[in-house]
Length: 257
Image 1 (tube, rainbow, N blue to C red):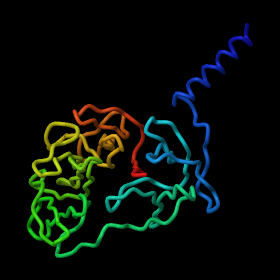
Image 2: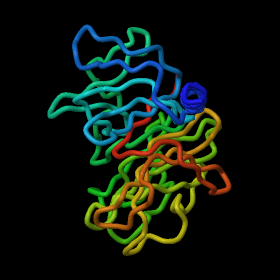
Image 3: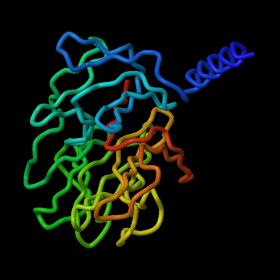
């Protein structure tokens, strides 16, 4: 009877692993120069769990472990960093390679925080305009989204796959982070978590859009603002409903392929 129970336990463990409830079938380290990652899908999340960073797909399945590198989004782009070093994922070579930012430098006192088609999305707080503005190829610009609160500035902007919505990152008072969604045609932005920006509102970080139009947002435990339990990366549908994709914090989204 004992061996029957042992076989049942093994079968149950295998079933859970296939559904994302167990350990990943491919776990490799990418800490050494010659180490290779497994073949990765076009959309991958990097999430820190404890002292390790894991790569997971959008179903939450763990694909690999990466030691010594912390995920984050800097200059509106995903990366893995360790001290002053920054890396990104080269899927073809299946390696971590040096990160090279591709956003243009600040010009005329305005800082680029994203793109919308052929136009740049810029913030010009230093010039006295806290709105998110669109700068067209012909050099003209127009305010697009008003500031989300009295104090703060726009740090990032991601256009949805259909070009109709913007996922925005706002840094409020005390550098409290909030992710918002606004129409790409212009207008007020709303918090992805609902409600208003105020003391105790859940902190949130914009990560980008999935191919199927979900906004990926990191909801942490919270520091200056409110927190979310469990902390992790959530996918937000157009109707505002959300689903937990991967637990952990911080995170970065490597998509667009």
